[in-house]
Length: 260
Image 1 (cartoon, one colour):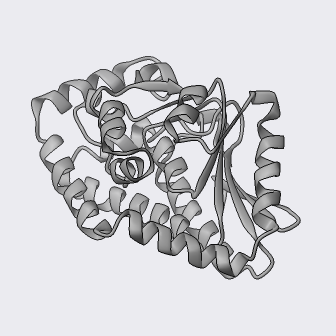
Image 2: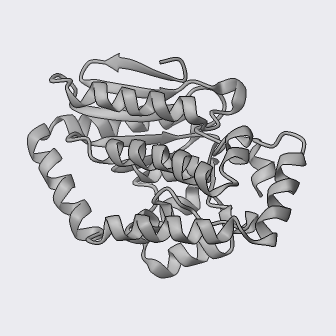
């Protein structure tokens, strides 16, 4: 694995997105590495908690521009989205608690990755958002359903239908962040939360999170199918074609500013 690194700190395993030169943009290699890393943790008997974080100045700027190009066809969408969904679902299904430690930015599929974790510690000045509708598509890696289950349908609709970008402080008020900390204290706040998780039974935590997820999203497989159907319709529209070309032509296509 070259795009994902596993760092161990006692019983805590850190899954580190390791593409800082690309702002931890998500491409097929990184997603394959993420899936492999989670598979490795599934069989780890001495891990009681997993922290997902980004190396460098931010968590993740979303799908890599080159990967986005390959998503513009039905076959490419089905294949690449399928890999994203499988990796995110596998992460969510880990029988141990997962914590996203978010600094800098978590945008689009990067935000959806944070939502696939059980808990989130977010820097107050971080930037988060799902800007897909501004680009003529929908959040399609489970983000719409996970966000609605987390903060309610009304608030989720507001953020998704307006493509709003919010900071970590507002994420805390909305219930997206379990803990909010100054950027300089993010690692310490994350460690405090992982210590609290490690003080509880790993087996009980794993079973409890499974029950909660099933209760929150009883029709999960149907929702994922509906996302794919919606995205297939979206990529056939002129709105998507225009926004997609504009994004790819923008300088620094994977900067947070380009996603606004």
